[in-house]
Length: 84
Image 1 (cartoon, one colour):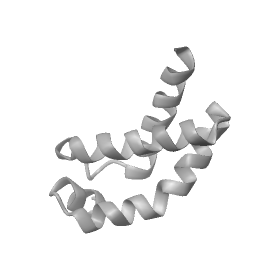
Image 2 (cartoon, one colour):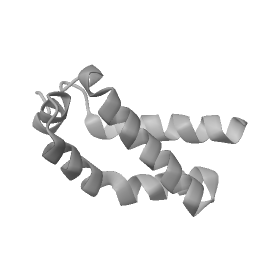
Image 3 (cartoon, rainbow, N blue to C red):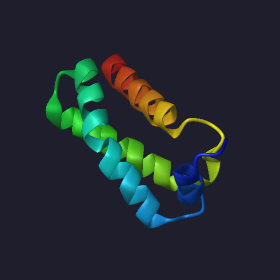
């Protein structure tokens, strides 16, 4: 089953993207904070995640879980930040 929100974002719907941002921003910041233990750095990571998601929206696969996708991106960005 296709995720309609993901499909709308893929098609450039800014309102759908804003809905996604509002739904996940706080949760992703908390998730990133568990890795980084720094609230400012966590917010930066999450902003990067959303910016990257919007810029690469054509690559979004509506048949996959957008929830899992953005949490995985956040986790990978946190791990990369910790490696530096």
